[in-house]
Image (cartoon, rainbow, N blue to C red; front, side, top):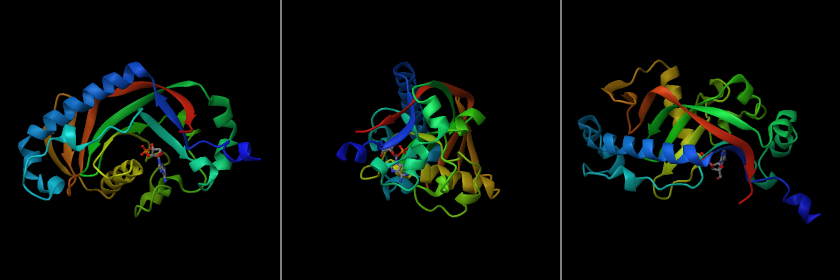
Length: 222
Ligand code: 2AM
């Protein structure tokens, strides 16, 4: 019946608890503010505006709602593997449980702003293993050979007219460059960690102290 048709959510994921959401929003805004002022960033401004003009990164990225780490995009059952995922034992067992997510890096591209999530073995049980989850978003060359869960992230903001699904694609692109042995250009030791530039507007801040974020595994219907 019609109820059954809508019984699968838009997506499953970990939803960050309110207290940590506020902290992460503060930390990430501070980071954008600092990045904006760095000479190294100004040198590559053209990646962002198409002109060598200043950008206000805090305005450039629009917030995308409640902070979360998507595990499986189901599109109400229309996405490939949605039903199989919802029926996984781990998904049923852990539904509603609180996990500690480790946010290990912040990254910025002309399209998206996100936080990398480093998943534990237990958390990886909730990562879709089936249909090549890393490529689920869109094809990133070489993404198929990345370790499971590489795409895990929290979207912190998107540029105008950019869909959040792009954040995972951008992260995979950076990780692919790293895996191919590209060192990037280490531009700055910041209070939060080391900032590296990977070309064409790709910036990654490896956090010295990963941010531990309590999050509830659940789903979103919208
Ligand atoms: P995100 O995980 O990068 O933030 C609703 O659109 C949520 O599902 C968003 O959080 C979004 O991106 C994610 N999403 C949308 N389409 C997706 C897709 N094709 N693959 C994976 N995640 C997707």
